[in-house]
Image 1 (cartoon, rainbow, N blue to C red):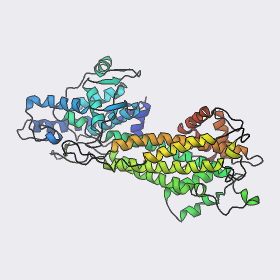
Image 2 (image 1 turned 30 degrees about the vertical axis):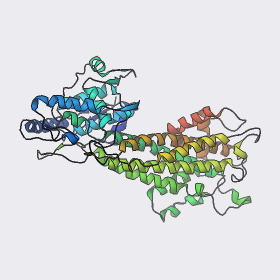
Image 3 (image 1 turned 90 degrees about the vertical axis):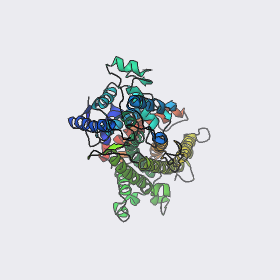
Image 4 (image 1 turned 90 degrees about the horizontal axis):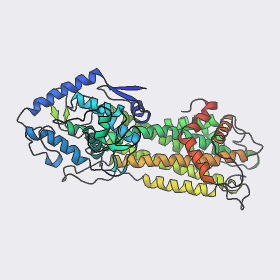
Length: 512
């Protein structure tokens, strides 16, 4: 099995995906263990002094003014974990929790938190045993980081609360640790706070969303090309010299993908022979501009993620010169903003995708295709209600595009009086990404049927490869009405699994 080694300088997006989704093993580098030990010596020295140090010998948040005596400090660290593990609602997905734990371990291994090496090793052991703490949907305000979700993870390290074992069964965490020979941790000064003070949940969800959107944006380029072809549109608008004079990288990439799919088509531009059009509708002609803007938004979000993956997010932190300083680096605003930006881009891509689908089904705008792509219109309804489903999904995407990061509800007796809501931004983006896959699947279903209905005209080789692959995947073609949900579910799986992009790439080579 693939192993990810965690050092002091952060991790990569690929590391997060490997651990969260592929179950990769985790190891601590020798450098990380040395940094952990060195930082712990500093914390131990401060703990022995009479002067109060936040997080080491004081309470937390609005209670930071109380100096805690040495005999109560272990209890203080246990109590912060127990009291902050206050989430409610449905369980969060396994991959999100694994990303959350792994990214907290990343910061711990930076040597900036003061956590002992044995605590970090226990975190790695829990991940490697595929023990997943039960984390709930609600509880994080994104400041100080994802407190409640991380607290539920720390609770598992203490052998308390519930967790899911590798077999998928939820059991008491203490029983699962014992079954895998893992001793619960006994937290000392600073450690409870360090385990729950970070942006790890929202960052993990950002990394996974970017990976999913990379596939979906390529998929949308393919379905847009198929629709342009089915509507007998002109691919002249995809010429690279047109996109060079408005030099947005995402736009150029999207146009290049569409052009590659349409290479050799016998359908594009055919309308000029008998039903001239000066230009195609915006939803067809401007597909690269809209998808390209989303791609550029993804590039910015990826830059933010890269910086955050290299960061050590905690409060207080142990600096290289030995100082332990309070700070505000746990605030989730940088991550929350891009999560919201992506939700806006996803909603707009879904919207233009739905408009193309509707155009395929409308006999007044489809340039000769049967109404609703039905076999016997009137007797058959064709894909009429598939578009209703797609429209409902797009309506939901628009609601999910309302920014969470524009909200703030003060907490902790006004000590934490401005919060990021980054966890909420991440949760709604995950829903939006799921729905975008469904929206693209409906366009794929309609566009492949429409291409096949253009009898006597030859589609592009890449289009033909997509049609053949989608039919082989169990998505039915033209014909009398039938139960549509199974077809749509198969189309969704085809898109979500990357099979649409792979089918096109058998002809085009790698898409951008």
